[in-house]
Amino acid sequence: MFEQLIERMPHLKGKLEQYIKLYRRMEVPAKTILLREGEVSKRSFYIEKGCIRVWFNNNGRDATCQFVFENQVVSSADSFRKNIPSVFTLETIEPSIIHVLHKKDYELMMSDLYEDNTFLREMVDIIFERQLHYMREFMSFIRDTPQQRYMNLLREKPHILQRIPQHYIASYLGVTSVHLSRIRNKTLRENIR
Image (cartoon, rainbow, N blue to C red; front, side, top):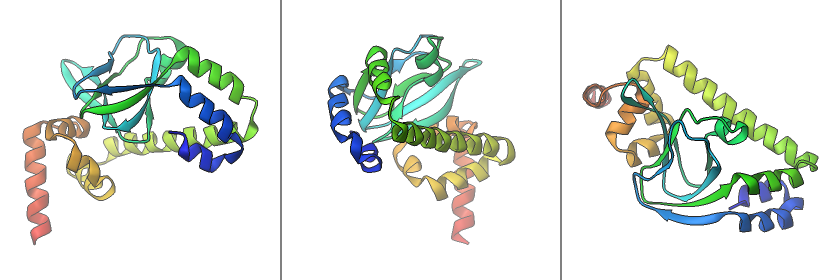
């Protein structure tokens, strides 16, 4: 579970292996709500297998923000850290194997690791990388047309198009399923030429 962190910080191997015991392994079916919009998050999730969709209700319609896959961690970070209602719902798309870390265990782990400067630098780097990712996504949503966003997905994240049902991809792109079908057909015609 902590393989990537151990590679980056081998001196923490013993500690990180101890922390694995704080996680509870769960197998959950597709369409399982792990956190509802409006609830306060008390858990963080590491995905061993499967996919979690992050979405919110936008005037009665689902608006998908993110898809999270294997070897990634997801939570409603603001809610988890500040004990405020989540603005997102976290839901499995596929049958998934997840590892759940409760907030009290997270706080115990962090209080121990905050003393390690190498760990703190790595966490800052990870947070910075995620921030850049979200900024690019936000800019693309403002700047690019739905077809350009679809082409970006096709080029940069083809696994999303292969694994995720079309209605969720449409929600992620901010279009209807019918509009996504038109975009896909147009893209296919353009690629055939």
